[in-house]
Amino acid sequence: MAREDDIRAEETLDPEDWESMRALGRRMLDDMLDYARTVRERPPWRHAPDEVEARFQAPLPLDPSPVEEVYEEFRAFVLPYPVGNIHPRFWGWVHGTGTVLGAFAEFLAASMNPNTGGRDFHSAIYVERQVIDWLKEIAGFPRSASGLLTTGCSAANLIGLAVARNAKADRDMRKEGLQACRRRMILYASEEIHSSVQKSAELLGLGSDALRLLPVGDDFRIDRGVLEDAIRRDRRDGHLPFCVVGAAGTTNTGAIDDLDALAEISRKEDLWFHVDGAFGMWAALDSDLKHLVRGIEKADSLAFDLHKWMYMPYDIGGVLVRDEEEHLRTFALRPPYLAHGEGGRGLAGGDLPWFTDYGFELSRSFRALKAWMSMKHHGVRKYARLVRQNVEQARYLAKLVEAAPELDLLAPVMLNVVCFRFAPPGAGEAARDLLNERIVVELQERGVAVPSGTRIRGRYAIRVANTNHRSRREDFDLLVRETIRIGEELAGE
Image (cartoon, rainbow, N blue to C red; front, side, top):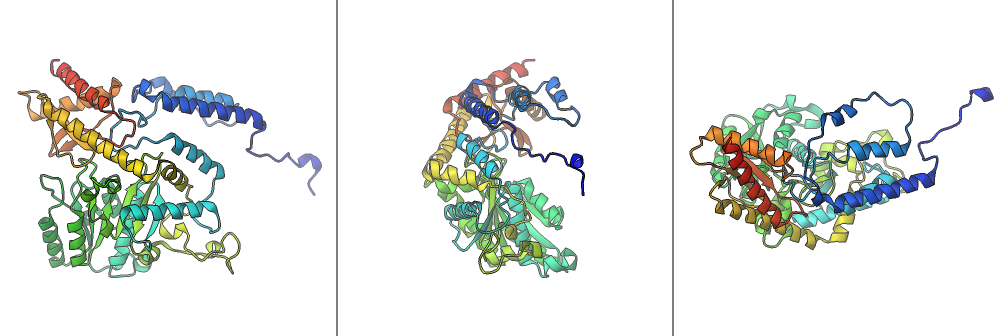
């Protein structure tokens, strides 16, 4: 028996003083509401100085610090130096803006802290199932389809393509693996497809050589004839074509493949049809834009993000799979410690699949709550109006570019992405590329705006991807004026 003086007082991580913690929590809430309310008064981004970076080289903290001091350190060294994507003039990459309600929902979800990978009779599971049903309705998928919320579209593409690989393989992939296949499995996408599709091919053991990146036309979409020729060629060479990947909004230009045509080819050739709809899927919300993604409802699997063009806080994406049985055959695994209960009783007593049966993760956060609360509060019609607003703003920016003799528009504006450049007369292509790279950096570092850069047909472009519910037309006026002003300044050096 242990001696009394050997028994230590039992500890917890709960606050020692609940009222002090309550007061700090209220202060945090007020600070963050002020931070969001005044975002337009700050630059979109500023480079964290060296002393801030050095602050985060401190050694492992072995002893406690007062929570008020930790919060003050956050206010001084973390909060002032964000990526900046909540700002109305942040249009780099494809970063969503987030919302105040979404941030509140994250607090509620973290406070409940459920693991949504499994178990049956708890509210977080019901919330995610309802959100997935709503997403199926938006995408035009049948109620019988399966779905899963993910960290983002990269994970969603991996899941969808894993199901595609296993469904179309000539072997039992889970048991025998790729090494048992006699023929190389091949998938097809445009050269504009997101890099996560290549990463998925590599992670799934197919190899990047198995991904046929097909050239695009002037509209930056897959050419139907080129795709059909590639499929015939690969079959002739003894390979096993298994999947076509369509893009509903390419990252570079926002181009949308002819999804109807790709669905038809996939059916004819007995291929899986997967769509990367990371942000372009949400065009389906607006009656005037929905035709752009016609055919998305015919996909066998669909990947998308809600933290991009649904403006929800990071991270939340998702995947839908038309054939639930194929989805389960790819991922479901039930060892004894994950067995369902008997007789429909207890926390594990239900007979429906758990979310871990649809993906590679067992530990999953309650990310569905921010989607559920946001969609209920704002309503899908408002999201549709905001998507339309962003598209109209992109078209407005394109007109400003076309009206400015100093600027060139480098790609058609199909959706919400605008690629352009400052083009001084007499400068060679290499000089223009270098100049526009510098303009992007100057726009960011001077606190004007945050576009990003890319290459369109080999030429460096200033790229604006508008998934920002806070942007106004005056912000795009400022971007064009400052781009020209900075371009002329740099060109005159």
